[in-house]
Length: 221
Ligand SMILES: Cc1cc2nc3c(=O)[nH]c(=O)nc-3n(C[C@H](O)[C@H](O)[C@H](O)COP(=O)(O)O)c2cc1C
Image (cartoon, rainbow, N blue to C red; front, side):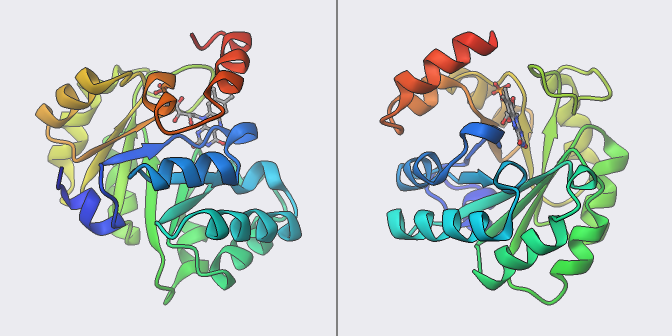
């Protein structure tokens, strides 16, 4: 399947692994990337530059495919500039920015050859991300336990609005669920999906049972 998302991020399928803070480690990210999606590790939970560097190097050892480092809620993390510096030094292929103002991240990334993906929950944020130079946005509607869906809109209602407001590609996020959700999202004009739906990971991730147990615990399934 080819979309601008697969081309820009150099992946086989237009599927991005959700940030999934405590669980998005090198093994998960590399498994998703090896399966043809865009795997992610989360800088916020790694907390120190040394740990982030170690985790990035683990991903690189496990896959030669593109992956992303997720920066979430950076205002709550005083060390984010140091963490971002590590991601730049390690030449990570992609950085995703979620739940926060992306502007300081773009200032620090100026001149670097790193693709960027910004999570947005409305048209204004999408336009701002585009103006800042994002390669694509992820439009998030209602989703579980993560307070990013400020507009409280269903994803399928939100994505056509975002799609019509910008010219960079849009990725749909939030309760996409499975391949039927992917098809519905594509029909709404987006060019990829972000999920941490277990059904999609089961084939790609050997530790799915571990994730399932924890997901049950979190009330996600
Ligand atoms: C426990 C947990 C932690 C999460 N941490 C992050 C995070 O650090 N960064 C992020 O962008 N999204 C995070 N998310 C959101 C998910 O990655 C996912 O993108 C979102 O819930 C959409 O998934 P869905 O397909 O289940 O609706 C988290 C979700 C859960 C349940």
